[in-house]
Image (cartoon, rainbow, N blue to C red):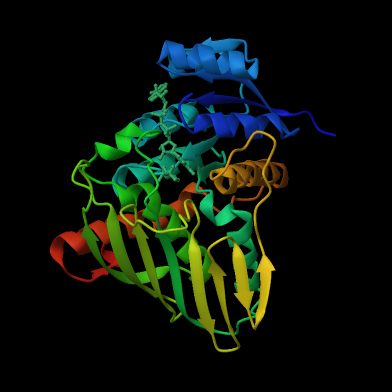
Length: 339
Ligand code: NAD
Ligand code: 89Y
């Protein structure tokens, strides 16, 4: 068996705890260093995961450590400088979503890591949720024939602001934070997009950004999809954090219904995700996908292959986010080639 890769995690906040649990479960990697500019979060996380070497400054860490990869789990404002620093240090990179604040930054980040000859994966984990993955495999196997319609829907009233208070503060909210995942699922299922038309609303008066968005996508394959998301939906039972899916193809249709129930050709299959030892409901679906995407990263490095959600691939998802905001702001259809 080859030696585990040495990695460092930058950002010890709300979501990084899941990433660290997943690394602890993967024999192909060991996290040898942690970085966070918040000393309390850094110390608590280091003690929780038994990681001895800690840094307040990422530049110092890259000088002091011999790393194979870095896992960037900070919020978007720091992504470009940290990815460029990692490229300069010559290490493989994982970067959380949203990958970048705009297309210019995103393209520069992809170019920097490509120039260093290293692997860059965006932690775009929703398409790796086991139930969503099963649907992707069915579509890619051609079981439904030619897909002509799809819907990826995420509607919830779950309080995400208590764990992630910054989500209430930004000018942008649901498309950049959550819609980015459902748009990426639509790409994984139906392929790249030619144009989009979107509407947005803010229902919750105590946040700054939009909390409802509806996007109509025209895919290059000829399929049309609707991607809709809302954090203003009071539904019982609450379905957070499930992405519900409907697909019509020339040979059949399927639905991924609430409760992870796959309904296809008159049969129902229970795709409930496992509750990993370190996971907790209702997040367990997302938490399992963290383990799966991080395993995928290690497998890609071993095989010298590009991750499915590489930085270059993610440019297409990010362009969809930008196109949706532009479409909603200007009340027009946006051609993706213009971005
Ligand atoms: P957070 O604010 O709780 O944690 C971020 C941490 O990064 C903080 O402790 C902060 O001090 C640290 N930090 C920021 N800039 C830094 C820098 N330059 N150097 C060192 N430390 C720095 O945020 P979070 O909720 O954990 O979210 C982090 C990212 O994860 C966001 O981009 C968010 O969108 C994403 N996220 C992804 C998922 C998913 O399912 N993929 C779920 C939740 C959050
Ligand atoms: O930040 C978001 C994400 O990526 O998944 C769910 C979330 O935590 C809140 O919308």
